[in-house]
Image 1: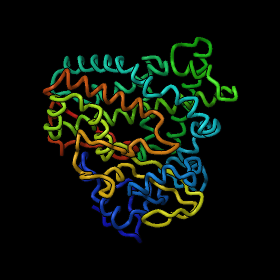
Image 2: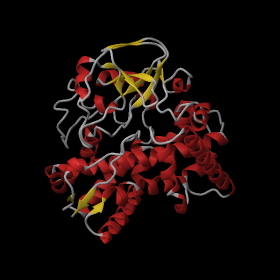
Image 3: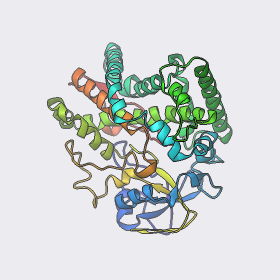
Image 4: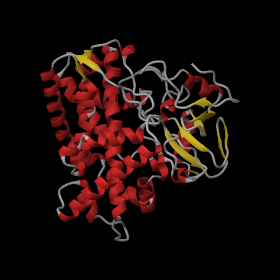
Length: 406
């Protein structure tokens, strides 16, 4: 564990001792340095917030914006991303649509009611993947057999992406979400390839609309009757494909692993499936990797937090995962309580920039967990939990593999 010192920025992201544990520095940061200087892989510096109240306040404070991250003085995460991910063509196109306007046009398709209507199809897809995993035989890798393919199938089905094209998104998302592996040229090439693909997909749907989200968005309009621009449609497709599969895949793998690392948790759910909904919320809170890198904001003026002042012009990292373990906000935060209620965790953010797809992620997790409990009540890890490894250098820190048996 690195020593926490106010006069020396920590390297960020902070490395955890194992795949299932939070970094030991979190507790010390919350107590001694809740507004801490950090250094990104790019070499740029930022400020890290780790207290629950500070993070929740920052995510909803209009003086801290995501749009400001496109400014030239904002910190860049990676050296290979010279313009910054918030200055990419996709980000610029979404900003041009206007954040609130864009959320109103897209958000109505991601309501809890609409996602509930899709749940039977999610369960059907999960059953099919479980069939293939059983046919493969134990031990099997939960990541490659279920956690990765299911969210891709779901979001591609929603957007009307041909099944033959689904494998291409893994390469693109790996490029965009990796903080150390790719050069600026490789990142820019991936952005261009992805945009060209999505432009062609949108053009095809204009000629032959289908029963999918992109086709419906073409006919949608805002309160003033203005439709979404062509660039906005392309960027929307890109953003939803990226956000709709990589993060949820990580959630599925970590959810299963946390439950199986102490089988009393799994067995409790086998005996009482009425706990599935609250268990999913607790797993979202408990997982130290669930919100990945954290949410970034740019301070447009000096802002006071409980642990100190953030100066104007500072890039701020809101660590929702660290906040979700804050001793001041939770009773026994390091204990997984599958019946915890209420559970106002910050994994999906807070305020106007909270995750648009959270009803989709929640529904997928509940669907997967229900099917696994029904089909494989004897599921267990095939390796010691301490042997599991993450993909380091990724914004979402997913597990490499989760070998299971049943």
